[in-house]
Image (cartoon, one colour):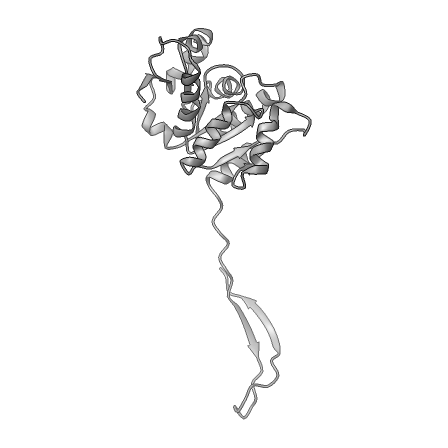
Length: 227
């Protein structure tokens, strides 16, 4: 796959500290809000946001990330995306990069849209699915991320929301999918806290004064020697 890249950012450097936010093109106001909040939180912590430059969840994430000081990565499928979101792509390119899997002037096709989903997974350390139905192409990004050994996260919604049935499917059927509701949750998956060191417990025991055997064990005090 050949990549067409435009912008002031360095793609290889950005992808080493990037998170993909993906989801349905026909997103709801709830999904757009969550995607924008996640993008703002991640960019505020220095993580580049990777998102599709079409409509829906990807556009909401890029709209929130582009004005920040952290460069973003917009992934497009064809010239129509560039034309329909010209100002947004220009904002992204000022500090980040716009990436296309194939010549931007080429014809639109389903293959190119599927390539975009795989590219979304390949360009980031993890993939977050914010809102997706069971037939959403965003699930391909999640599947590709698993194949690449990268964390997959999903956002829950009301069980009656068909627009999030794909997220619920990931959480139910894929045991390694992590449920996230805040940017802090995502950061916790990316940078898990160090395990708490085991404390050594010193137990004072009475001994038989003749030294022949232990008297009935009795802890007179306990003391943690952890620093």
